[in-house]
Image 1 (cartoon, one colour):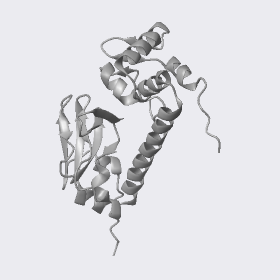
Image 2 (spheres, one colour):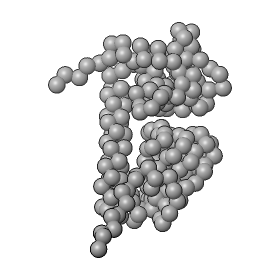
Image 3 (cartoon, rainbow, N blue to C red):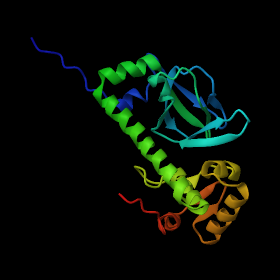
Image 4 (spheres, helix red, strand yellow):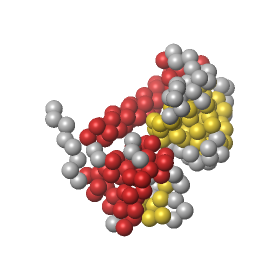
Length: 223
């Protein structure tokens, strides 16, 4: 009697279709997905678009923690016992995002090695980027931090082709992301434009030449 083989598990297919404990939602720009203090009961996966992760202090001061894009997860703190959300997440652009209930994610992590590998790889990539962000804040000038952030938003250095045109993003938001003032961001943006590193055309068009700002005198960490 022939043994029926179980079909191979495809994480991409799993994350593209609705099913038990998973649903796909379309979000408009600025629409809130969850807020600080909300129940943490699901993990989210971005299919299209970008989201902004922020935190607000008790004094009402807001800080941008991260900008996440396609193929990235967020809200995974619930898997480590986080009962409530510690950050706010809102769509920066129109976005298509899958919601995976906590129980479903735990189950598929245990049952499907292919999904576990993909999930861990995405989280490690983000952890590496957070570490690089910290080094950037500690050692680099605000001009370099802005250049690096623009390159990251345009997906330079990621798999696939860069997206030269960044969706409209305010200078206030850029200032929050790199830890400086709006006036400094305005000064550097004008400088980058005069040097031909960026253009404004309904959004921010980023040229690869902007890499020169980041690579020049990059701080070296001794080991």
